[in-house]
Image 1 (tube, rainbow, N blue to C red):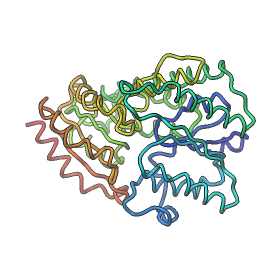
Image 2 (image 1 turned 180 degrees about the horizontal axis):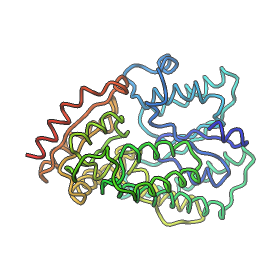
Image 3 (image 1 turned 60 degrees about the vertical axis):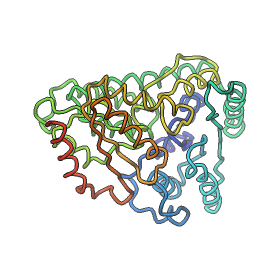
Image 4 (image 1 turned 90 degrees about the horizontal axis):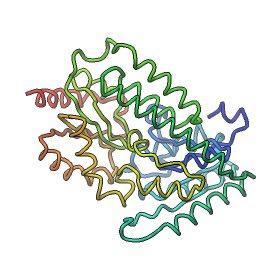
Length: 365
């Protein structure tokens, strides 16, 4: 981000997970998604002055980062409607920026959460996209170009295809999941061109024989799910227990790039297809009815013997689903393990080692 600022680029911090990135890129801005900062933020002293302790680590780390290390790097905030915690962050961020004598604009888009079979929201959504483009143009003095938008959509399509290819290498055992997750999370702070280069290098490395650190033999296939990838120590425990991650259903990984609509020069048309056809995620309430079937079908198709839920403490979206998902997976003969990661667990995840080892033994038997 400092490198981009030194080159005169304007950085927009976007949240939650599925913002219209190609639109920002097409207008010459650098969108970043400050998500999953556990390994990069030491302490939450500033955030804790604004947020209660029962707030998820995602919000607390994001607030700490944006009001601390990144405060002077941000040129704008963008948000669409999400959980109650994130909905209330813009006021805090803007007020604190103003107190630091930084006039940082806030851009907003309301994503209709009504089931698409219940109401036609296309006209409303088109107006939301149009107003967003107008607000960006007015503030930054930029002009929207359909041609540049198409080029940006193509770049994000390349990134998506490389991510899918890397996921296949992980499933085959030729690439470590932790390496893949690290590149994907770093990509949230890179221009998409740099992310493409990083993924290209990663997939090229995955063509080599498996590294010695990978477990011997094929291992037992599991799918992991959750809002955030597990800490590296938890991933290491899974691998050392002989569990091979054959697929992920992480919000910040597979759910974010699983589906990409056909390119269209009209952003409203493109993003309506993008959100309407998005891979099911509990943060997109209108996809909730498809969520269980999608996850179960993916686990079965990937021949996973188990599903490991990485629960982010205080994330009500994910926790509401766990009991029903556990039941539906059991009907398919798929075992489940739930691991809860709290904000204090970033460096102290050894407590999960014995549970993971027992889970692996149960599956093998």
